[in-house]
Amino acid sequence: MHVLRLDHLFRRYAGFTAVDDLSLEVQKGELVTLLGPSGCGKTTTLRMVAGFITPDGGDIWFGAQRMNDVPPHRRNTAMVFQSYALFPHMTVAENVAFGLRMQKTPVDERARRVDEALDMVSLNGLQDRRPAQLSGGQQQRVALARAIVTRPNILLFDEPLSNLDAKLRVKVRQEIRELQTRLGVTTLYVTHDQGEALAISDRIVVMNKGRIEQIGDPGTIYRFPRTSFVADFLGAANIIEGRAFGKGMIESPVGKFAVKSKAPLAEGPVKMSWRPEDMKLASGTSGNSIVARVRNVGFYGNFTELEVESAGHLLRVQVDSDFKPHVGDTLTFTIDANRIQIVE
Amino acid sequence: MQASRLTPLLLVLPGAGFIFVFLVAALGMTALQSVGLYSLVGESRLTADHWKSLYDKAFFDSFLFSFKVGIASSFGTFLFAYPLALFLRRRRFGTAVINSVIKIPLFVPALVAAFLILNVLAYNGVLNSVLMGLGIIDEPLRLLNDRFGWNVFIIQIWKNLPFELLIISATLQTIRTDVEDAARNLGAGPLQVIWHIVLPLSIPGILIAIVLVFILTFGDYAITRVAGPVYPSSLSVLMYTKAFTLQQWGAAACIGMVITVASLIFVAIYARAARAIEEMRT
Image 1 (cartoon, rainbow over the protein chains, first blue to last red):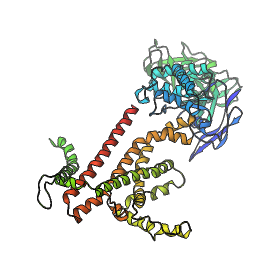
Image 2 (image 1 turned 90 degrees about the vertical axis):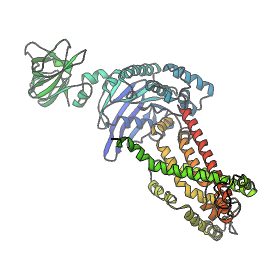
Image 3 (image 1 turned 90 degrees about the horizontal axis):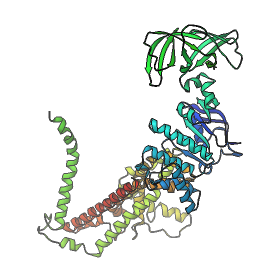
Image 4 (image 1 turned 45 degrees about the vertical axis):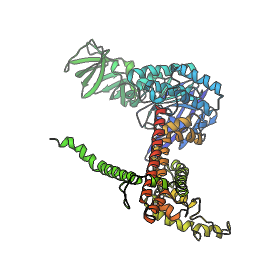
């Protein structure tokens, strides 16, 4: 049963199309992430769901109700803003209680639910503080408590972690996911951080230039990108153009490859994509191998990333950090046929 | 070598020095004259006579009148300026035109403004002609030089509206739109957003606007002189009369002190309120 359905959504601004024919269904309790670079239309889409932006075309459905003409304050969504957007003149408790006040919840129930929500985000004891007296992480939690306390139909997140430092970001995103699962609240989550999207989502919607590039669960999106954009945006990818010939064979400047493509390959130009970690060091040149010269070595602690060159193409390779090649070394790599994706 | 150290001083000195010298000298002289020293006319001696001479009905009526004009004009202007500022906050059809037209009174000197409005409010003026032409009234209304000072309020509001609008608009600009969006998202309708979010967050600007307009109107001379009641006069008009008509320079100095001190008291109240709000937020 879907809770949110976007049907051929379209939004133009002077000079460019922000959201172009976007259709999406979000199921009850699901966490769906809109992922893409800035300007891809993900925030515009989120703000159309919240009602801050009116679509120029298409429909927004919450269940069986068409929401296009419903103003934001009657939509029963709750949004966590990038800036948190806390009310600076209200205490933490007043901030959290605001939505309940607007819903005219009785005072005693209001107090109980505010305490409950603050408990959930471990902010008990800070009820009487003002937002200015809180750390960034604490403000983030207040924003979260303020959103969930109203028991919204749909929870909306607009880059909620981008103002936190790296460690806190990982911690808070786990908390968000736990809380979302526990409450079973349908969630639309916007981010440009692929790691965040992979870690938190039931499904990821990769967007580019207002359009959906691919929808899928994190594993599928990462392992089987449909386009070179998706391959490159989620983690690094090596993308090489070649020509398909024979049965699942591809000829390219860096070598000849056997691939296992789901659909039969038509002869002609194709794009291949594989991950840096899919290139394994090999002793001899058998099948699917690439001979390349090391251009750059980057030590990352748990792995080492190499930049290698083969036939004028730069490739990224992840190897074990115990392996210590030198710039100028010639190495041979092999790629499993399963790991080569044919992308658009 | 020392030039770099002197630069800040050179930057500060002309402006600050100018203000300081004339402030201290002028206020000091006026204060001394109010107690009979450095008298411009007659003998100079320390006396409380000038202050005692103020203790009459005319002075208290003038004080009350000026106070009333100050309060009514600053709050009256606010009642017009705030909704307008809310409307003009977002760009929409007509805001550019309204924005430029509304600023015109800023560039019209108070005396000229008073004369301009006079034509509208006069016994045989535009307003009365229109009202009578429409059959709403049979006799012209006496709007000018009336005892209460309606005309003074109207002219003051006309004159100060763009000024308050500028201050309040600047304050509204500082309110983040996503804070308002958050309120709407949590179920607040347009009026509730204004009541619960925009109004409380714009109080600092509202305070500044009201206090500044109060001080401007409390010490007004030109508008009261042209359009105000014959009696009571404003404090500034009374001061002028004492000095130039009655040659009571000492008494005039006393009134000058009263105007200045009353204004300073209001600034102090404002500063206290502003600090209280600031403390409330942090």
